[in-house]
Amino acid sequence: MATKPHGPASYFPSIEAKYGRTIDEWKAAMRATGLTSHKELVEWLKTEHGFGHGHAGAITQHHLHPEKWAA
Image (cartoon, rainbow, N blue to C red; front, side, top):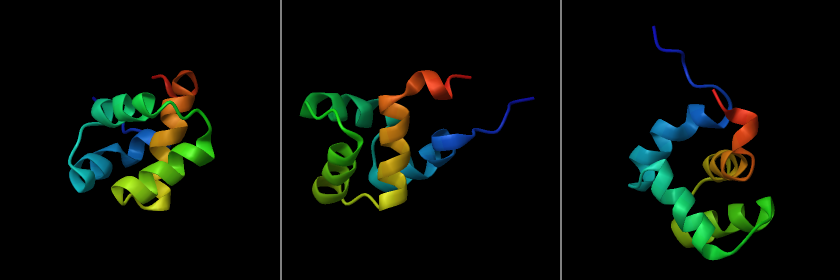
């Protein structure tokens, strides 16, 4: 039986559906910006890609701290 995603990953299906890229593609785009702070990345996602604050925060948290959310 598959476990239900928790934390930021619980947002991933809706992020992929709403913004048209996979999570891996979004993380690659985030790395390519050269930005490293949570605030900067959230603002970039919101202003450049139209993310809502919750979605931007969730993917940024997972991107910056993947070890915290490992299965």
